[in-house]
Image: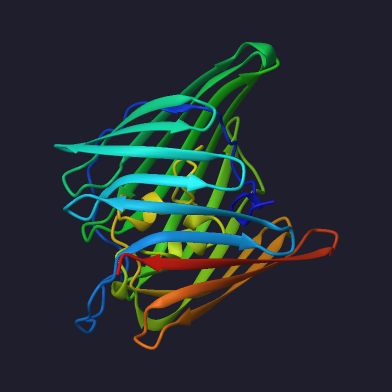
Length: 307
């Protein structure tokens, strides 16, 4: 089971992305300002390979960029299948076309604000066999410095004739150019639930600007919860700066606790080459559920460059 799907906090929906619109920013309330960093040559990541040796599986992302350094195409592959997403840019719009090894094609259109950040996403779906229909809306708010501060997912659906209305809200705390905390809350059918998570993040002092992507968003076990639901790209949209300014340093630890007793801790061990560029990250995940049962998993991320 992939690390990204271990923490099931919100209702995942099979859906197509429809409309993304702009929203206004509010005054900054954090210390997210990026500290000065030394001038370095930024290397371009061309491929990311993820392995779980314990369960003998792997998958990879091959990345192609346009002349402005934006994703032109992303290819996800494993031993059995592949998915290719092509991205075309116009003024404040990204047109995405996804096709896979099953000959399924899907088209999406994202509209961005003036900074180039996603602010609103709508998914709609209908499945006749399960009387399953609904709409999922995601909104993202940024402060005046361009850091994400609130992510909200609102799901209204019917399933086997039952009605659900759920709001998941995540607020973020920034310091020295890094996300250092988040709080996740859930309101179900108008009632605040005990599905409340408090998470802290720690970093080293190595500058992230040695690479062109914020690869924290890829290796962090839930992609900071800043993700497009039903996206196969596992944090790459966040890593490429579509959801605000990216982190300044490399993540080293995540600690997350739910008020109902579940807890998980993640350690990130980075390996760098002789010039200081990251070559891999070993992610060690451990959790303890409400009964005290513990579990552990380990994943390895490897990074390849254009040069």
